[in-house]
Amino acid sequence: MNIFFNKLRLLVVFYLVAISSLAHSQNMQAQMADFINGFHNFKQFNGNVLVAKDGKVLFEQSFGYANFEWDIRHSNKSKFRIGSITKQFTAMLILQLAQDGKLKLDDHLATYLPDYRKDIATKITLRQILNHTSGLGNYTQAKSFRDEYSRNPYSVDEFIRLLCSDDLVFEPGTEFRYSNSGYFILGAVIEKVTGQKYQDVLQKNILDPLDMKSTGYDSHNKIIKFRVSGYDNGLAGYSNTDYLDMSIPYAAGSMYSTARDLLKWDQALYTDKLLNNEYKKQMYQVSEQRNYALGWEVTNLDKSTYGKPLTRIQHGGGINGFNAFISRIIEDKLLVVILNNTGGAPLTPMTNGLLAIYYGKPYEKATEHVDSKLYNSFKREGIAGLKNSYQQMVSEGNTPRERSLNYFGYELMQMDELDAAITVFELNNQSYPESANTFDSLGEAYLAAGDKQKALASYKSALKLNPDSESAKQAIEKLQ
Image 1 (cartoon, one colour):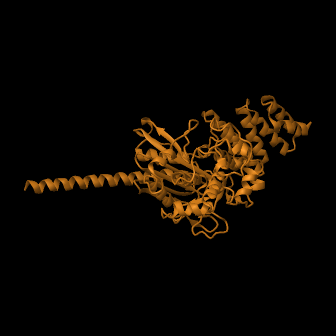
Image 2 (cartoon, one colour):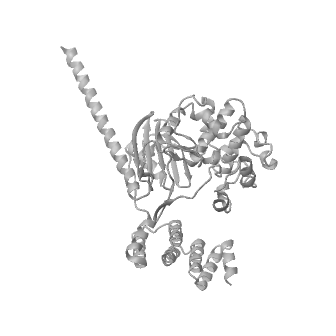
Image 3 (cartoon, rainbow, N blue to C red):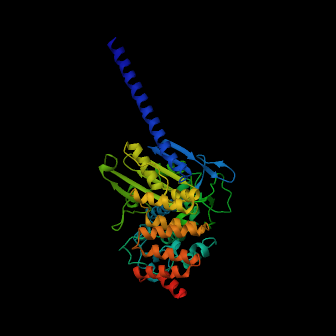
């Protein structure tokens, strides 16, 4: 009889624990949905979110549209461009080649690309390229990159000669500087060592073994089912993003994927299916200059963040019309994936909020952007409303950041709202009178409006604050 009642008690306890766990899970899911909806409702996010633990999905939801023109909503099949998340796959391919004895991470680049500039290739190592301490520049920051180069197809060798062969920006191993050029070059190394195209090695060594059927190397001429369209998110609403030929991001950023496939990738990294433990340790080993390892950013979180010491391994990706984020808490095998197709969504605070919800910590909800508030005031009440809204922010101790206002002003100029743009630049200048940039931007707006006298005065003030300003020097020379 006692045995019967003991079993009954155990069953009741298990039942109550299961009910409590289910209730907690449902509450957490509701919190996460409400949290992400906040960003979506402010038109700051449009895409897919996944949170998983030990490979099991805790939360997964789609927000908004994969294609606005055709009213096609997102689903868990939506395939997004993931930009620089590609770098961790490129790093994995290099590490696999090292594991197989086909290259060495601390060999100089010249060993594998003998045709590259010898004065540079004999100084930098593959490891330095992987952790962005090589001193290589960044082709996406090249002058006129977007206008002159981004739409044209190039061969790998041609593009390296054209935009990845500049002088070093610092002595190798002494500083950190994020370099798309470096990872483009790593793609060439993979092709030289294997004798195969980068995308074929990627498919054979990673995507096929992990059954990542919804992930691949993107190309505009391929038919890819469920491929998402990319949009820019401006004050006037969404617009189709600029075309980018996918031969350009290449090994630095040409992949597409889904949240579910990135979960497969995450889970494989806890096993030896792709890489042994020795090389996995190297993959997560940061440099002396920055908490950046080989294709991943690695941060040790102290107890105050989520209640216990944890290791966070993550990376973001941004490419025309898209941005993406993957964040992994190693000790708890916790994963957050966020994929967006409307430009620069605030994925870091979104990720931090989801992690805080999981760990039961406080988090900041979405708020309307400053430029959106000011623009809406302008649309309702004109320039007077814009000024009143700005002054209210200042009086409440929420003076907008200089950079945010400057960007807002240029957006207004692009929309041909020149008077409003001048007003914004003037307000920015009043709030940040010691900034040469506020004077420089104001001078540009005055000049666009045809007021050369005010433009000249603004540029002179900019030059006084920053005697090295080439834009101010050139403008003054033309105006005098």
